Image (cartoon, rainbow, N blue to C red; front, top):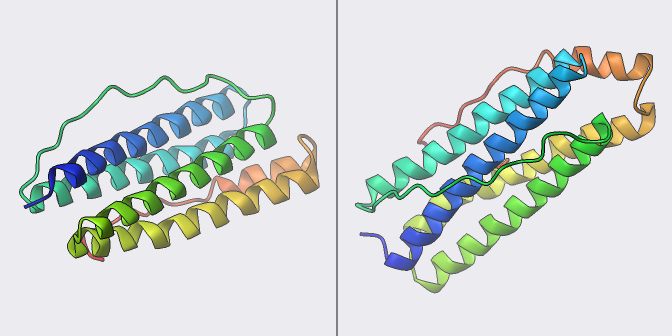
Length: 170
Ligand code: FEO
């Protein structure tokens, strides 16, 4: 059985993951509009992965006999100044999500909920990957600038991304 506080926090995290999906879907639409279809595809894959993160928590709440209560999802921005600006915003967002996950771990330990702590370790590791992959793209965009051949090369490369869905295994 989940403590009420943990159940509430996990529900909040489901909302944060769904907002992440929404934000990246908005970024995907922005890139599509700019004719940068590789960037758009990368963001679309990111959207699906974030939905997977929400579903992973959703399943865990049920596994522990808890209740899922979905809240309203905030409206994301509709455009950014440049591809670099969008990716910088994505990096900032991932750092924020890492903070939320760290906070959740802290709460799980305060409640002596070692099962939830163990469950959350998957997200701790995932955040390292998320920050690294977005951070690498930010760095490359800094190097090539916001237009020209370099940008189109990155676009082509990002278009190759495949979707990795999380499983319920640790
Ligand atoms: Fe689910 Fe990108 O954090």
